[in-house]
Amino acid sequence: MTKSRAGFYFVLPWVLGFAIFTIVPMLSAVYISMTDWSIVGNAGFIGIKNYKELFQSKDFYHSLWVTVRYAILAVPLTIITSLTISVLLSKNIRGVSVYRVIYYMPAIVSGVAVAVVFKWILDPANGLLNGFLQLFKIKGPNWLYDPDWVLPSYLIMAIWGAGGGILTYLAALKDVPKDLYESAEIDGANAFQKTLYITMPLISPIIFYNLVIGIISAFRKFTDAYILGGIGKEGDFYMVYLYDEAFSKYRMGYATALAWVLFVIILALTLFINITKKYWVHSN
Amino acid sequence: MENSQVVTNGIDKKMRHYRLIRILKKVLLYLVLILGSIAMLIPFYWMIITSFKTEADILAYPIVWFPSEFTGDNFKRALDVVPMLRFMGNTVFIAVLKIFGEVFISAAVAFGFARFKFKGKNILFMILLATMMLPYEVTMIPTFIIWTNLGLSNSYVPLILPAYFGAASFIFFLKMYFETYPRDYEESALMDGANYLQIFIKIFIPLAKPALITIGLWAFMGTWNDLLGQLIYIDDTAKYTVQLGLASFSNMTGEVLWGPLMAASFMALVPIVVLLLFAQKYFVEGVKMTGIKG
Image (cartoon, rainbow over all chains, first blue to last red; front, side, top):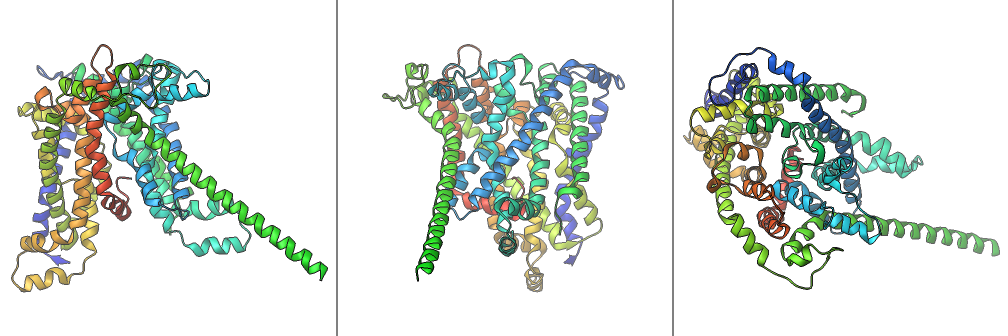
């Protein structure tokens, strides 16, 4: 490696960007969260009033609950689904690259279009899903128009998009040494034991990675919720609530306080999962 | 004699039994994979078929799986409500300018981190890693306020300009890529009198071409699929992107026009799907190399 100041000049754009787009906004965010700013007019300093209001707000707890229960169910479901697909795909399949694209596609094509398509699929009267259930003489629920079925609607969509993890899982599965399985077979291990004692520990770092990413993105869920909604506020995810406070009600101070709380939650969860790491994640 | 016959028969039977189970397992495996694939593809089918259905077929009960009559009306009506082609042009405009900055500036920063020693480098790199963990949402509102005060909200500047300071995850990815090359790469060039900028542009950029294409694709996806950032900054309908156009179409009050809405969604997805099919290799390679963007 060359010892030279030239290196610093190459790094400089990012250092400037970090100062302008991270340090300055973060410091201002501390201040803004303690004001009653509404875009127009001046910001009045109100101390920790926004935080006090937030922790007494029903809507805050409700949106947090909507998000948490989604995360608790969606994250494990997607991990199990993509892991299962990956294990199946790693078994000498003919045309594996075709399946790989098919399963990976939903993860790439996120965005409004997919949310809109799901809104149509979940349409109670003319949607695909209830039309499919009709084939078995089952009367499908009202999905997004029935408070009890809003969460399952979101879970269906989450499972459909679960394939995003398969590329990392497949790469990890390929790296598991074959002779480990062979010697386990000689010792009389069955398929289930091989999965539990060889495959799982060896790919646990990837599961860990997908768990962290999954939780963070569940807490940041916005696009789907913004488009799909859900009756009785059951689709009011945290970020939708934050967006509404900031850009519909122009309560910048309060919304910034919400953003800080979100940040602390994500940070705490990430740290917590990191602590559990030593109990279940294999390391060399 | 008789006994050994019985034994081989038994082994034969066992072998046949074993083979049968293996075949059954294979059949089951393919069955699961195919059913899964159908589940993955059917939303796309439903979207495409709906966009070519007549209004009567769309609202028919029980649902029409395959229409007897096809129409292009939905596309015409969709284009009347949302000028998708214009919005696509806007999105591509933003994406291209953004990608250019994100790719080349990130590469330059990564080059600095990977090929040089300088004071404070390790601390700076640690900070870079930390910013990858920082959710965009925390800085979103203050950044919005800054751009508004500069009079630049409702323009593409807030969406594009930050890209010219590099993107942390891309820098991280390219740093690892650049580190794989031995030192002689720049040494012989330095002897020939080249400066570092020339070395970066003439040697390392060409070397990193596959990696640059990969992050370019990610950057394009990011821009094409992003709603929140664009929603915050763009108010003018004329400046709308694909995501904004679709979102406003979908959230319109009144009866939902499923046919035109699906036609518009179809138009929004085609570029992405085509890109995925053609550039599959780069996506797979990129994920394999780092694991970012699972």
